[in-house]
Amino acid sequence: MTDNLAISATGLIKKFGDRRVVDGVDIAVPKGMIYGVLGPNGAGKTTTLRMLLGIIEPDGGTRTLLGRAHPRDASDQVGYLPEERGLYPAMRAKDAVAFMGALRGLDLKTGRKRAVALLEANGLGHAVDTKIRKLSKGMAQLVQLIGSVVHEPELLVLDEPFSGLDPVNQERLEALIVAQRNRGATILFSTHVMAHAERLCDRLAIIAGGKRRFEGTVAEARGKLPMRAHYVPHYDGDGIAALLPPGAEREGDGWRFIVPGEGAEDILKKLIDAGFGISGLSIERPGLHDAFVRIVGAEALKDDAATSEGGK
Image 1 (cartoon, rainbow, N blue to C red):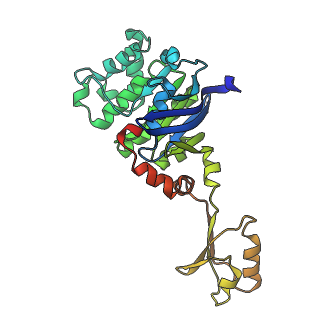
Image 2: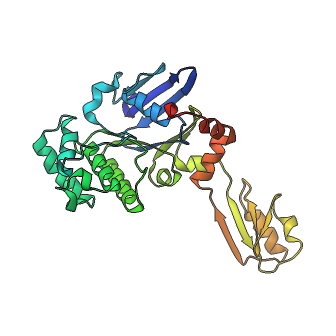
Image 3: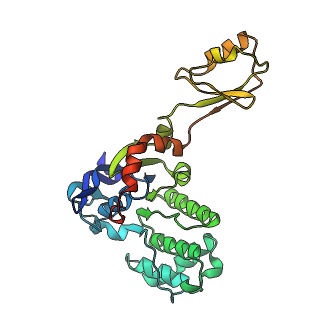
């Protein structure tokens, strides 16, 4: 099983002073997948990623990265975009990308050639020879991301990659992440924005208060909450409420209710048989945001809000 994992970690612990900012986290990232680490600000996401990469050492637990017990032994096969961005402002975009590739063992000539191709493919062909200081923040961030993939790593680790990007560059970044997965790379990224995770992730872990609260697919996370129905009768009447599940509420010209585990068919049959009919019906699955709030819980969100910068 471990042969199929790009990253495996068990019981990771990290303390800053007397406080555990990561408290027994398990992570298993299958090869070739897009895997998200989700959590509120201060949940322990950044600290977890840094331990997985070997940037900081855990105070407890074990981890392997691309089969190595010492993550830094695999550094040339990893691309990393840290939460704190930074490029040399006087460098041209293609040279900045090539330089980042050289840090991972890619020769500069090949790096520049790939840089031009990647910049053009990601809507930055006009900026190939532009100095970093003349680029917008979003464009510079995309250049740095391209620099993290120019050496074609087996594993790409992105810490809050969408932070500060406008919608156009967010879309470009999502496309680049999918392209890397399609190339065969494994992508691990952290975020507190559910929409990106919902669109991209094959699997995800939810961390809050330094603990892993959930691991699975987006569908499994959403499955933690029941579906909701909005029903509009063809003929309204006082007897509808008695035929709906407990807790049903009036909404506009219809009713909203939680769909029972066995489904809504029996409820709808009773409504039809009673003569109320169906003028409109929609069944809504809960979004990842709603599931996230349920999984994390109010108490964990409260704990995370009190966590200092050292516990990112």
